[in-house]
Image (cartoon, rainbow, N blue to C red; front, side, top):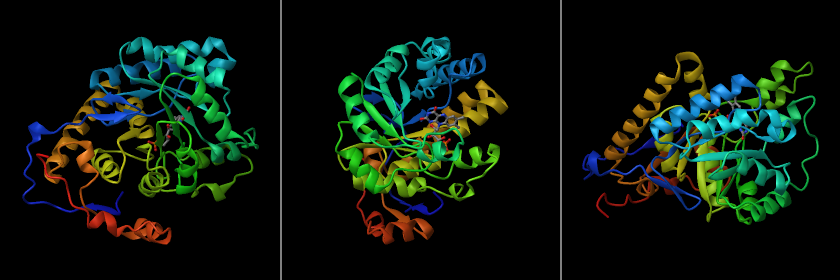
Amino acid sequence: MDHIQFVHRSLPGSSVHDISLSTEIGGLQWSSPIFVNAMTGGGGKATADINRQLAEAAHECDIPMAVGSQMSAIRHPEERKTFVAARKANPAGFIFANIGSEATPDEAQAVCEMIEANALQIHLNVIQELAMPEGDRDFRHALERIADICERVQVPVIVKETGFGIGFETAKLLGKLSINAIDTAGFGGTNFAAIENKRATRSMSFFNQWGIPTAVSIVESAIGAPDKTIIASGGLQNAEDVVKSLALGASAAGMSGFLLNILMMDGQEALIDYINQMKLDIRMMMCALGAKSIKHLHSVPLVISGHTEHWLRSRGMKPERFAVRVPVSFDS
Ligand SMILES: Cc1cc2nc3c(=O)[nH]c(=O)nc-3n(C[C@H](O)[C@H](O)[C@H](O)COP(=O)(O)O)c2cc1C
């Protein structure tokens, strides 16, 4: 995100009081573009406690959250309560179910029912699986399974990466399905290759620097699947990262590792304060940019430099079009 720079406006014509942070994902309205992305569950009481605390924080801050992969609860029903803890803590909140692309349509429906999910995330994690000695080695027919899951479940479906980013070619394939959104989960934050390589006896260190950086991934996904909502994630840490992601074309921004770290190190109060402060900071930046809504952010000019510019130019994605775009006026 260091390669993305806003163009300052001395006459933004805006007012902090008239700014809306609301956004729409899969036809559903959220009051804020930030959400807690998928992390945990399935590891006994410790993970139930984390899901409960994350869900309470999400409720307090009025933001959505995703639970971690629920496959463990399909295989071991005694783990269901570690996911249900999130729903119990936030009965009326927006909660995503989460499952891998290896799931069957019935398993996907079961994980949605388990937590009365408002939407379903299907995660793709080829690199983590390959880096794990006991991981999957066969990734055929994932697209067909995702299509079948879309037919089966009654909630919006989001396909997400897990830290290696979604590129143009993948987005193009996903764009043909009846999914609602693509979550980039780009390279630059939590790195499951590095994590797995630390515990493996035979390290696949070539995967440590693998992946499409988050900023690039947002642009590639938006071009590859122009009809889908794009969700940014992967290494986002603060309001500036969020606003830059939104300006690059995303409609929401997910945060995982950074928020978990605040919860574990400083506690739930600190997490709630941090999220609420981020919401205020987003509002301040939108005011400075003259953007009344998340949609308006999609038209603010951006100068893209460094490796990100080089990547986009090499891929024929014209980074200069962000620099010359005309911002929508605050009152329109
Ligand atoms: C502790 C931890 C556990 C995770 N477990 C899952 C998971 O079960 N399902 C999933 O889709 N993503 C999972 N993720 C990936 C995140 O949702 C996210 O895509 C990735 O961490 C990149 O975001 P970040 O850099 O903000 O952490 C996990 C991330 C963390 C930090």
